[in-house]
Length: 173
Image (cartoon, rainbow, N blue to C red; front, side, top):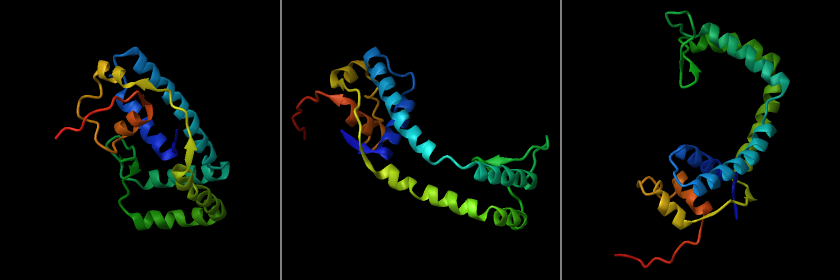
């Protein structure tokens, strides 16, 4: 079967969503085996987009400046929201970061160029061999009967990838 790396990312999410809700050992085994195979593929993308030492230094110094200018809680720690520092004066932060951005301008440009190809990598079709299970195992387990499997959802993408022996079903009206 071939699919995009973006599909693999969705399937990984779906498997992790199921977590330990799978009762059937054969299904749990298939999910674990597929998760391991998917991780190997996705780790290659992570490795390819890993920042250079120079960019990591820029990011470390940028983070220190942002943390210093962030709103603080009662303990004096920087406040974050959705993984970002809460900055009270963005203009002042931009001004403080300008010399750092200038110093690392080439490094920043190189890093942006490296990341620009990520979408292309994710949308590229790749051959991928899924460990499959018969649909009867899914029916026995019952984990997929909760109604959470909408068309196009991560769980439906997972099911399309791992199910074999789909029975012919007469259309109902």
